[in-house]
Amino acid sequence: MILWFTPETYARLRLYVELCPSEIGGLGEVRPDEDGLVVTDLFLVDQSVSAAETELRPEAVLDLLGRCLAEGRDPAALRLWWHSHAEHEVEWSETDETTIEGFGADSLISVVTNKAGDLLCRYDTRGPHRSTVDGIQVVRPDPPLWSARAEALRAAVWREMVEKVSVVLQVRYPSPIEGQAFELTFLTRLDES
Ligand SMILES: [Zn+2]
Image (cartoon, rainbow, N blue to C red; front, side, top):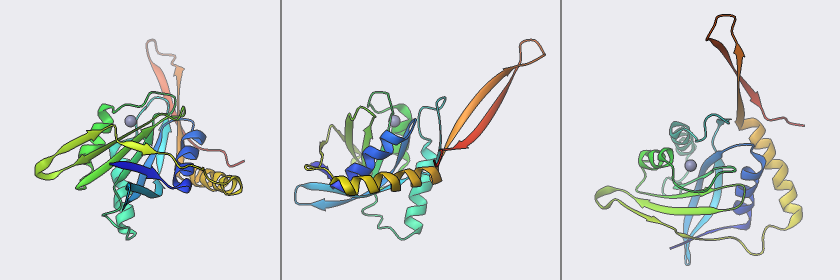
């Protein structure tokens, strides 16, 4: 099996990863094609990202799945889960395994990538024949998206991130009581300017 991206969906993926200060993730639609599976659309999870929490919560991914289905998206096509490990290596973490187990679809394509552009892809099936095939070949589009479109897409992706992504900042202050500290949590939006 081969997974390939359209120029548009691959450019979106790279922009989400590049523009987000930390991890980011979402879902996507894949459709069968003569060469394998093609990624035809991507969706972004409403999420709070923080330096302390290094993985997306599985519940947030399932939330988005529920909303996409409620919007009338085709459940047969909605079986790509993508996320970025930001500066970290691409590998399947324990949280990733939990997300994949919890997904509930008959089959799921998972993609993990990072800012360096490394990319891993696996294919999981459920039911009586639970199986995992790791190391699925991914074909990047060639040529990439033409530059005028890429620029417009960059602005659109940033607007979407400003709307959907909050950044969690945790600050510890020393307390007047010995051995204790206040911890304040701030929820900020990405800057629209
Ligand atoms: Zn992960």
